[in-house]
Each structure stands twice: as C-alpha cells, then as structure tokens.
Image 1: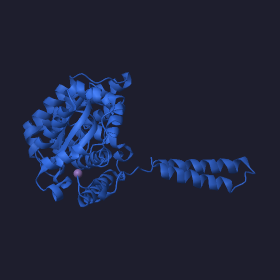
Image 2 (image 1 turned 60 degrees about the vertical axis):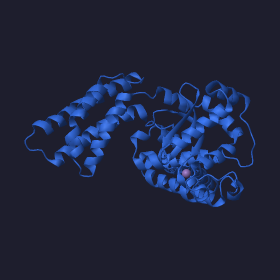
Image 3 (image 1 turned 90 degrees about the vertical axis):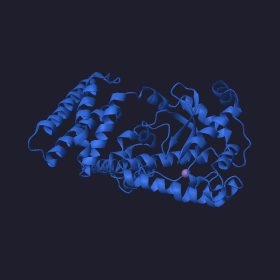
Image 4 (image 1 turned 135 degrees about the vertical axis):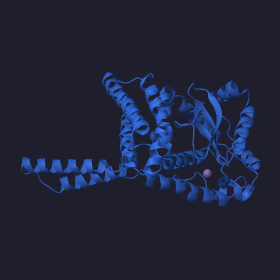
Length: 365
Ligand code: MN
C-alpha cells in the first residue's frame, strides 16, 4: 500500500466529513460507506520502488571513485533498475510485494524481475555502506564475529578481495550472515544476491561490492584490482556493524533457514524451461523433457512437504496428486498420441502450470 495515497485519502475523507453536518443518521451512514469505499480503493494502490538518495555528494567520493562514475552509476544505472522493476510489477500480484518478498521468492518470477529487483536492492545496500570520509572500524560485536570466522580483519579483506576478483564478468562480492548466523564471504553473478532463492550460498548481506565494470571503468578502466582496494578503504564500518546486529535477528534469515523444498525447485526448473518456451511457440523443450517433467512431479509428490497448517496440507496433497496426474497425461499424449497438436500441448501445459502455482502459492504467498 502506498502510504502517501492513504494519507491523501484520509485527508479527502476528513474534508468531506468536516464539510457536512450530520442531521440524520442515514446521511452519516452514506458518508461512512463512501469513505470506506475511498479507503479500500486507495489502499489497493500499489507501492512503487524509489531511487534512494546518496549519503554524500557525487564529488565527495573522490579520489576513490570519480564523481562522473558515481553520477552515472546512481542516476542512470540504479535509476534504470528502479524504473524497470516498477514497469515489471505494475498491474500484477507482485505490485503488493515488498522488495524482500520478491527477492526471497525470485525463482517464481521472470528474469526481468530477478535482474531489476536485485539491481535495486544491491545498489541501495552499496550506497549505504560506502563512506569516503569515514575511518570507522567494526564495533566489538562484529569484530569478534570477524575473528571467529576469518581469524583477523586482514583475512576478511583478503577474502572479499578474492571474491571480487574471481567473479568472472559482472557480479557482486558479499559479506553475509548465513542461515547458521555466521559470517561468510560469497559472490554472485549479474544482479543476483544472497537473499534470492536461486542462489546456493544464502544469507542476509551486510556488505556488498559491485564488480560490474560500470562501477569503475571510467577511472580504473580494466583494473578491477585497484578499484576493489579503493572500495575496501572506504567501507563504513559503523553502518556495517549495525547491519550485522540487525541481520542476526532478521526474520528473513528464518525464512532462508526454513526455505528448503528442493524437490519443488527441481520441478520448477523443468516447468519453467518447458512452459515459457511453449509460450513463445517453441515446443522442442517439452517434446524433449516431458518425461523428466513427469518424473519430477512424482518425486515432488513423494517428497517431504514443508510445515503447513492441516487444511493447507490437505489442499497441498490434492494439488500434488493433480500435478502428477496431469504431467503423466501430457507424457502419454506426447508419446502415444496419434494426433498431437501444439494447441493441445499448450493447453495441457497451461493446466500443469496453473497447478504448479497452486502449490507454489500455497507455500509462498
Ligand atoms: Mn552497479
């Protein structure tokens, strides 16, 4: 819900109320009804994601990062992710999801959402943890955790440097609090991040280093090494220390910990590759993988269902059986059917896709 829209609406409603005198109860009832309709209408207004402001002026990052790079990086690249994310979610169910909800369940969304929700989150974190003027150090709590996981501060910096340097192509190096509550250095490609359910090493990031060339090319050209050292020199450890403290009690860490239904993920991969290709009139993937789709549905049906309420479990079991039946029917149609048409394949595949979303919806939304 857009809080500004709600505030505006409350204001409009208040003005209406103030301008009326309630001589009759029925008049008041009508007004209250109208007001409620206004409230419901406005409260379903979607949020839109916004570009955060930088804590410093573009020029203040010199000499570590040049002003032009900061300006383009923030006002063009990051703004681009924000715009594209807003465009992708408008008018869909995703509109009412928070950024964290999108990231934690990103395997259920398109690549456009994956790239742009990641791009928005990653850069927002990046701006927060950079401070060209700070000579801060980790607080005692974080310092102890660094010692426990890496031995000493320099080893952490070396690990971050290695992660940043060994990431081939575009991506990010991270310091995260993992599902066990321990610090860990990881890296991801493109705009992925450790919150995402498609990433193998998951956790809540407390520090991220952008290693896309757009982050350093103007000043450092191809010398990523120089750039990474520059970044390691301007980390805002006050902010990172606070993020460490918050991460330890972050409910998203609990979600990551319990988010383990690998059989659903395995099914989803095949579903996604076959269904989305068929949507673009490419039937080769489903011709080749319909057997795999059926087998994965069978494995899913017989896997351990994550903890749900009892009514949800009954619904889930029904959907799982339906999925198994539908994928078997499609397989039979494709292997034994005499008159196979693309229209019929697409129809059956769409039904399977709907059932899959019943299941994914049950545990995800
Ligand atoms: Mn970037």
